[in-house]
Amino acid sequence: MQHQATRPSIASYRIEDRLDRPEDGAVEVVLELSDGQRRWCFFFTPERMSLVGDWVQGTQVRMHLGAEHMIVVAELTPEIIDRVLRELDAKGLLLEHTRRFGEGAA
Image (cartoon, rainbow, N blue to C red; front, side, top):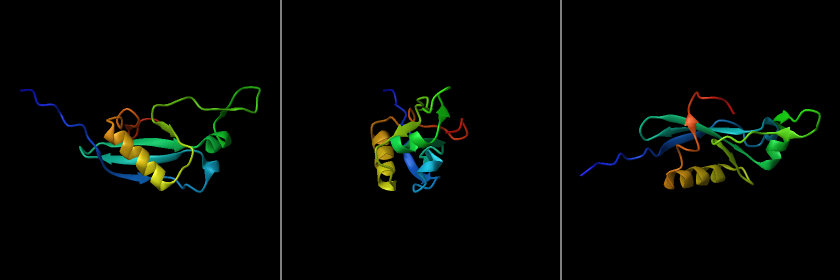
């Protein structure tokens, strides 16, 4: 009988940025997984995205290139962040939608 490795799950997480400052852009979250890995992702709302990002040359339009660890939600609260992370964890999608801590920046 082959033993299948258990995938790591959320042990804890920390919201790194203030939720009441949409002009700051993304809200980063750092996760500690059950196997000791540290990972991160970031959350945006459409409103936050319209306030930050790179300009499309010659326009007043902001651009954000899709990133697997970027999560866009209509509302950004601690409860929504928790529910999204728990759902990703339950569906086995947590590693796919987070990056190793220290890889890249939001």
